[in-house]
Amino acid sequence: MSKKEFAKKLILLDVKLKNTGNIPSENTIYAYLNGRIGIKIELIPSIAEVLNIPEQLLFDDSFRARKIFLKHISESITAKEKELLQSSLCKERALVNKMETDKFYKIQDLLVYAPEMFLEKLESILREYRDLTLKFR
Image (cartoon, rainbow, N blue to C red; front, side, top):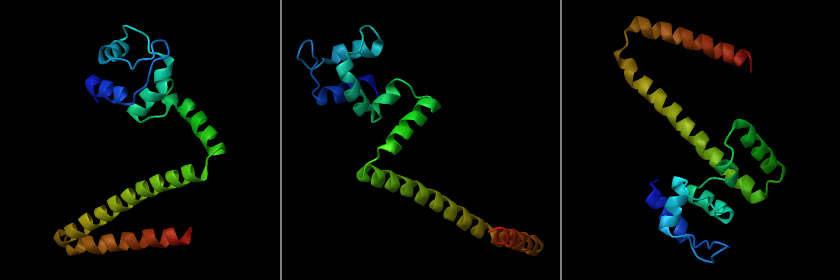
């Protein structure tokens, strides 16, 4: 996202500064982004919204901080949040399943080019893997 796009999105949120009662101008936002002036604390939630991230990530994106944040969320998760999380994870699983399925079809399409001796050996190895997998289930 460019600075100009960011500034426009922030202005559209219609956040008023406490000290002036006005929406920050595009020039003021550029000054924040360039470090010429400090960002006003009341803009933090709106900045996070524009970036589509939790506010906490603006301060610390380390593994430790993310772990603490997730622990806090998991201890107080609502039914709607849980549903949102599950639907997001299901999409991820569906994508992985699709990628695996695509991989099998690609291999299947290439098998017509393999010599018979290779196919026999491949079948034998795959049967051994199957038997081991079923043995340890």
